[in-house]
Length: 118
Length: 393
Image 1 (cartoon, rainbow over the protein chains, first blue to last red):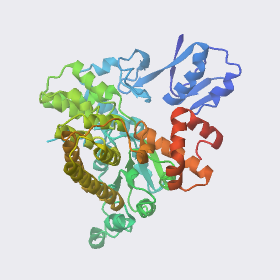
Image 2: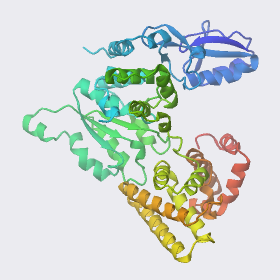
Image 3: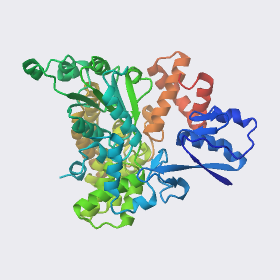
Image 4: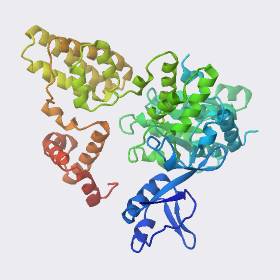
């Protein structure tokens, strides 16, 4: 089985010749295709539906989600919580931020920036 | 003080998780008067911060929240009596000072309002929101796309999701730090894993751990058990506290428990006649009480019914009542795996009933025993019905 990392909302090319399956893929709710750029997956449910088709061709797409605090990308498959996490999120927290002593303060300051509270 | 209350976030930025949903709500709060939607509806499972965020938002933006829990205020009359005047902008303060106080109305658990049975409850909420005098926020654990269609159509829907284990760790780490607790990382991870994204449960588990309790017991594996399992557990114990605990965590099955115990007691060969009479009489009274409570929607009687039912089951078990896996025939249609499956089953039955042009009662009592056999034997029947008759029909 080959694994391919993807990011929600960002275009990517599927490393397989799709043929007739292309039509089935673009019909999935939450999966779009932009000519010249590639496929865009919106959320986890769309991804799991897409994987149901691609798994037949020996390919599995795995999501990478952005760390809410530092902005680096986290690989869902390598996460220690992969078994219990519902994964239907597009924001996570990376291991280095999670082990940071000032995790809460950093989270709050990012959150504050989000709401632009003056 | 309860830790869930003590450490309830007071500001928006302190609420962990659901970042996108929170942004959407804040955006809506700044444009609610010009928005084409009347209010905002937050949907998501319990314990993930819906209510907390509403209060934090109100606190940060300077609103005073008037909360109405749909368990207490369900009918149009009651809702209008409580908050109707606000929608028309006629508070005493406005009358005397001419200034309108910044008020937000928050309808909690609107999924508890039945559009048919709760005479105009939903309509009253929509009516108040449509005046656009104050921002109206509603929350629900689950929304029925058909039953609550009129609410979904006019409210902006924002979905709250369960928290990820890492987000739970942030919350727990913060509390542990403030309380000066020395909790190992492994314990935090274990709690985060076992709480299934429910922050309230995770905090309670941490509290239990802090007082030296066994927090793993709090993950409540006894909640929403299938009827058969619940009956087996109930009949296998003669501990009143355990029976009460089991009943309280499985309140959806009480009616079935009463019927089944009625059947067990009346068929019992070892129980003396006077004891049998005593138990049957109490079970009959409980059945009447439960029916009346549901009809009048006086749910505060639940605690009394639960205590009496626990006592009756305790006595029945002590006097030799044994559950042998038999569910009374007239309750058979409810005997499917659990509440979710039963709801799915009911939905399917409704669709089939419509196709057969039969009344619900006639269908359930006349046709359903055959249908349940078919459904149990063919698990893909639902998919088949959806394919033939359409998913939303």
